[in-house]
Amino acid sequence: MSWTDETTIKKHLFDLDKLPSEFRDVEVELTATGSGSLPHKGVVTDSEKVKKLNALAPTQQTGVTMTGETWLQLSYDNLAPGEVVVSSSEDLSTVYQLDKDYAFKPAEGKLRRIDGGGISSGASVVVNYLRYQALTRNVDYTIDCDAGTIAVKAGGALEPETMVYIDYQVSAASSADQLTAEAITEAEDKILDNLKDEYDAGSGDQGLKTGATELALAVICRGLASRALADGLTCSENRSRGWRELSQQYEQAAWRTLRPFLKAPLPVQGAKKSNQSWEWT
Image (tube, rainbow, N blue to C red):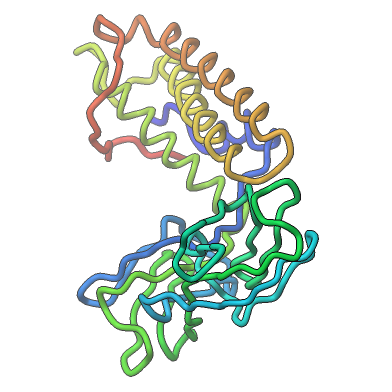
């Protein structure tokens, strides 16, 4: 007996917001056997770009003159984000702040000063950065796009127990499916942990169906609130706040609907356990 399903969830939510489908510099730690898993499945074929750090020691570039707010091309592109240091001199006596004193485009290897920051127009600075080495599919690694897994290719430039950084896209449908499946699992875990003894996963009461849908929607809205802050679109804070408020409304409605079926008191955080008896359709 199914209480809710992906079709029901999507009818409620997924025409209301755009799920992110592009991800950059996702860290994946390869195991001793040379395999690793991306946090997403359903990767768009040929969308991935796999990189590793070229060296642990930074590349230093001196004599970089920052004029106005013009973007400057550094000696290399494909640089590691979060690994750039811009200073007034080689001894790092004055270190400037990213997004306050200067802006940085790591993939393009470009830098510019920010007007009103600590770098005067025409000043010369020293830039230290780490470089990525781009890897080649079927030469350095293999990837299973559907499963979201990556593996070392024997004889290539990639070794086991290495951290790689991957840019990739997932289909909008795949992103929605994964978020929905995770939400259903979390919702059913919480309900199962708190059902009265006379009910079980096969109970077909309408209240259980409605409550399961409402609780899954609450979980999804909570996830969309977090994603809204990271997607770079306009009004991200207001959108995130709206999703949080909607999540709270769905959760309150869910526990009201489920109250006749649950033990007292109402749950705060159920322990994780998977349910194999419900066949979601």
